[in-house]
Length: 293
Image 1 (cartoon, rainbow, N blue to C red):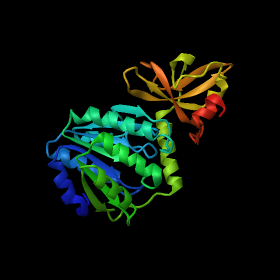
Image 2: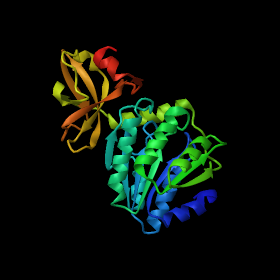
Image 3: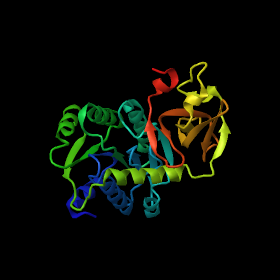
Image 4: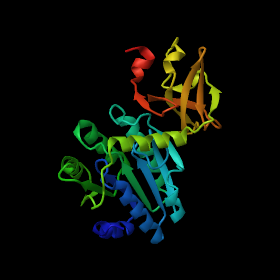
């Protein structure tokens, strides 16, 4: 455990409720979360880890908020295996604040009544209107008892000030731990590709799908070719996501390629296309795909 953060971690393990971790990319939020969860387990607490970083996912695939029950050290070695998923549909938060906040809040609300400590890791979007709006509403709906803000310089000052002004949570400002190294854009992309590849490992099953199974609903007369290579979230009919799939148009027949077809009740359209050879992603606007606007 990092010595600089040891007193805070010791204090948090004596508490109950939700701990929300905020900070820009590569500030050590996930490392801190692992250390806090390990300390909670050692103290005999039950815990859950909710990963709301949809671009640099630890629990489940990118584009999803994931939940992992953590009751044993073995669980910390298998954080990538999500127990619950909520599909957001992109690796970008811009334009998807509502989806991102709702997905996170749904998992926090589920975990809050089951375990002693819920640790929520968040995305690195902390600047500008999008970053502040996302963090404001995420705090509003997850109702954390403690917020831990990782500071590199004064970059978190606007958000910290805002959250202290509007909410009653205890906000702890901590310096980024020594030894935390920022990854390059190439390294971030390589990690993301690895996670997409693990989620969409061939051979994928191809399931024929009807136009009536989508959310949002497809407009009448939509050429299915416009949906080719679109990323989708497979829904179980009870509000949870089974996993990811990719649409393929074959002679005006639409299929979803996935490893999670069993139990599929519906498909949520994402805001990206993905190349199943390179796992490179391209952002799209659903209005343009569906209406040409």
